Length: 161
Length: 247
Image 1 (cartoon, one colour):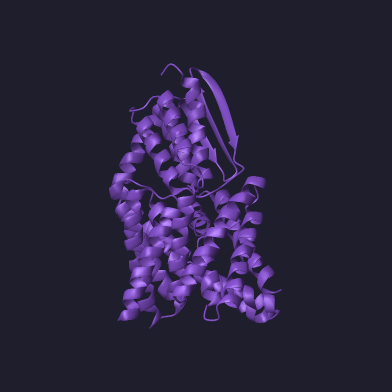
Image 2 (spheres, chains in turn purple, yellow):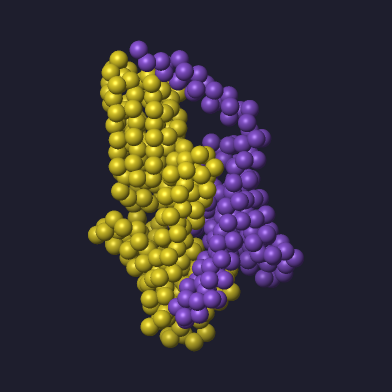
């Protein structure tokens, strides 16, 4: 229980200050921190029963869905929130261990570790893709309307003489 | 509407700022497009890559093409948000071209790239990551110092050379140095936690995310280029740490 509380607090602080360090706008810092904490706790929870690369997929999916929905509400680019919230999940440990294997000269373990890192990063990317597509489908109508306005303008003005 | 020729420069500058600070390609293109449409240009066409932005449009019956090459790419999420806001307001007709220029200039000047207090706050994040990855209270302190030094050294190197590879290599080497020093000074510290906590903020998370989003949106060239950037950055970090640790 004590550990869980500590993890929540420090993942919140880590994401919030990371967002500040990346010059994120103030109105998104708190949202990103909450979003990132939820995602990281979900990842730790799922890790107990699922493989790492699967649990990171679901955690990233949840983070990105929350980010995309809130970004549309506050009219900020979604990347600003989702990128900062995803940071605790980025495979830094795996990269570090891979590097250690190669530096120690054990190439075969290094290659296995590289592939693991790539799979981990790949499932994160898959989740980002899926979240973007899902929100695009949900918000399709509104987006299309906005886009259509722009396209309509282009079509009218875009005739060459 | 008098100075339509300037709107071309404004649009392309906004798009370039978007890409320089880590925005997605489609967002930069859309921003350029909406400014040009808002200023009443015709036959608008915009192409953006991570290294160049090109736009062509018909202004008062005359075709014009402009391009800006982009040499430097950093991460500044606030600037993306503000440029996005400026382009929306111009498209909606709330701002004219001169005010748009003024707004962009103001945003660029108001935020000096690397103030010290931002480095300090970012270093707190590195310390928290060190604790998240099984570090103790003393590792918080060392990761804080390592991240702060690395960030400043990265900025110093960036002033001299525009290659991200060199600055990332230097930054991660400094982190590894601090971690080694920490282990030799205080026996209880966890080198792994310090290094991972401090490199967390240098990892190419945004480049990776943008590479994927660009690829989904059909900007294949940008997607592949950014993917390569992310890979090179990861190699630079691993190399920088390895250089120091393997001595």
